[in-house]
Image (cartoon, rainbow, N blue to C red; front, side):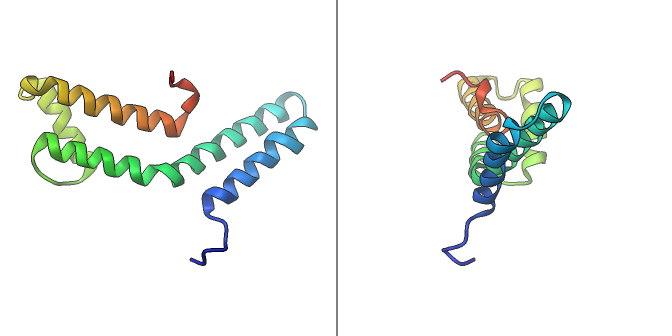
Length: 118
């Protein structure tokens, strides 16, 4: 892709900004509410495009470090959950908690960063 073109995240941010500024000020009631919902969805997609690949890579790296092998992120998460349930990772509790906390924070930072206490 050419360097001088805006990214998909940049285009979404521009659309969201337009909705939150010019459009939102002209609306009331139900239409204003639905426009706010659309603006929020655009924000989630924008953050997913910008931050999702890095968050996914960090999650995968954490899973590989905890479980000792590579694989599909969904399957590794299922294995992690099973191993937490069966107690086989109890001796690595601090590592597991750190991984889970960091993963959840990254997901919340994408889906709704306002929920994070900074």
